[in-house]
Image (cartoon, rainbow, N blue to C red):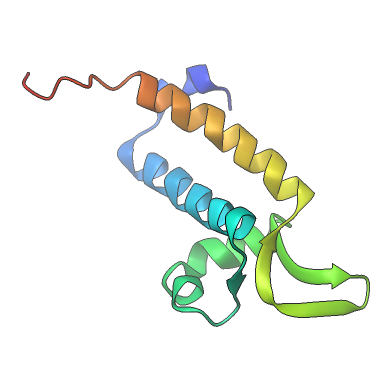
Length: 98
C-alpha cells in the first residue's frame, strides 16, 4: 500500500492502522511489559504484531525478557504506516467550520 492508496481506506481500516501504529510506536519508544495494562487493552494488535515479527521479547537467541520491543522488521513497517497515516492526515480538511 502506498500513501496515495490511503484515500480508498474506510474508517475501520484506518482505525486498525492507527492501533498497529500505537503498538509499534510504544514498543519503539518505551518497551512495555508483557502483562501490562497496555498489552491487555491492545491484545489483538500486540498478538498480531508479535506473530508477524514486528515486536518481540527476545533479546538474544536464547534470552527473553518481560517486555515487548520493536524489531527491525517492525521499524520498517512503522515507517510504512507513518507514510500512510501522513497521507491520510494530509487529506483531512483542518477547517472544522465547514
